[in-house]
Amino acid sequence: MKYMGMKEIAISGLVAGFVTFLLSSVFYIIPIISQISSQYLWECYKPYDALGGITNLYLFELSKNLVLTFFMAILYSYTEGGIVMKSAWKKGLFFGFLIFLVVEIPFAYFKWITSNYPGMLNILDILGGVINTFVGGIIIAVLYARLSSLKS
Image (cartoon, rainbow, N blue to C red):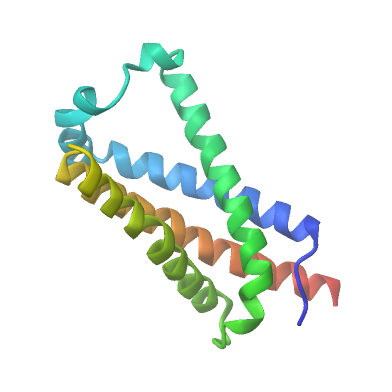
């Protein structure tokens, strides 16, 4: 079994982080999604000024995505050999689905059980998690396959 080197992990994690950040940002500015989330925004979150403005919010989101996808790439490097699908994008989709089940669903359940976090925002967060984990998994797997083939 071959594992990704640090270069492959860094490249795939960074690319996946940037792409999922962009897709998530687009998701949350879709008019109907934006309208739903703006109904609850000020109940649940600190004002943007408390974070230093909207730019800092986006920088925090980007850094969060980069860290998460970097760790996803590390995890994928150790589990890739155990996923029996042939196609890289299918492997990535399955990997993303597993990450979704392990991270997003329990976190949404935890918020639902332990807080007054609005159910609709929880659903939007789950949909955002689908974007991050599924697309991130596909990008990591496809880049892994391409970078591995360049080494050979």
